Image (cartoon, rainbow, N blue to C red; front, side, top):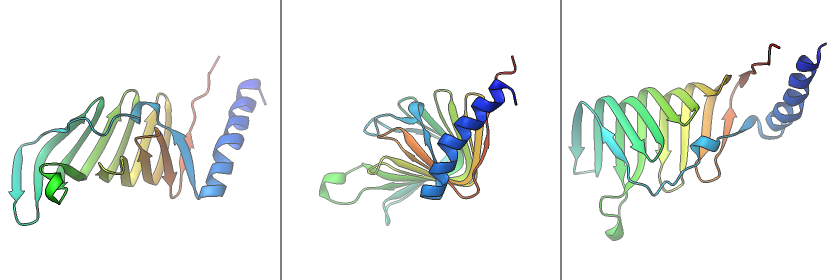
Length: 167
């Protein structure tokens, strides 16, 4: 076993195995995903339907969402607004489906659906999650990103591909 292989194996055993055994998932750092959830949210789409009865809006077709440096795209996004006297126009959560992609800096995640809870500052992605960080890739059934701490957790059949230095 060469030094590079030994180093990768040591990192894998030290970082990934204990986290998955202790938490039934894998903790990962999301430096680029850490941001200010109080920033304004900008949404563009092919169509918009507003439902006054339940206080929601549905964006359809090539939906693109931006908040600070973070970008999300999907085919359909339902926006739910907060309720109460002080909550006029405040977004409570975004529910995205249909090929969701989340990008921030050099990190990107793809999934079938995602729920962005503005108040909790979390994004939960489900269904064939693929996370890329630089040259490394991780896949799982579910990804939960904590935007305040800049950490995430992968759950459900986690698979990791670590690129080694080929020198």
